[in-house]
Length: 211
Image (cartoon, rainbow, N blue to C red; front, side, top):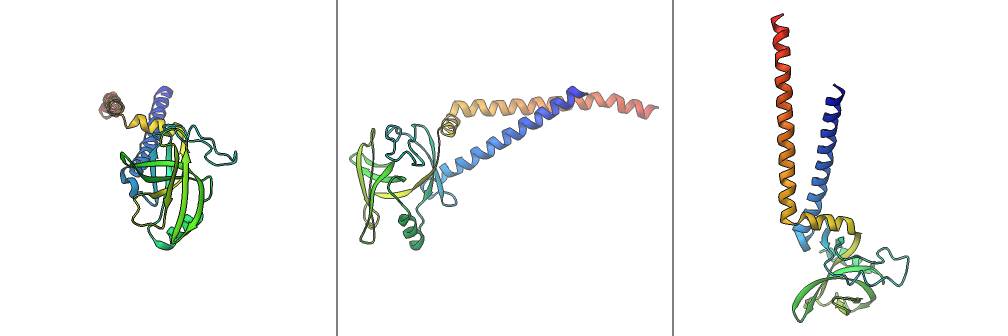
């Protein structure tokens, strides 16, 4: 009897953890799915370049001293409303990490780099960003130029390498196939055990009715 209760408790805990994992993955997947439009003002990306991993911040107190290759980053997107947009850029400081679209010879790319310098310029801000490694050098963006193909997407507010590795693995088709197979086998096993338990109870119920 105790073993049966322990098994049931183990199954409930496993399902609870699985549900939590699926819920968390679904939330982050939604951020990925909505892309640059984001969800509730936030977006998520995987760090596909090692440029930020090679560049420690000058200030050791910086929140994101480095961002390793493969990390998950969550971005607070630039608001669409004019007042909120101005307030967003007014809060940007040197050392903050921004994600932005930038025109290169090969086309537009999305880059995440650190703010080297920021100062008011016309109707917006003149921002210089940079890092080492891939896309090395300094990128310049003028937020007051609506015709420019270079623009800020948002500010990095969260970074996690373990979550990035996990989500990167979960996006692998082979992993998804194995994951779905494990869930299916677990459900079938639980259903089979439940049927067996019901069959075991059936003779006992019949015996009680016969008495």
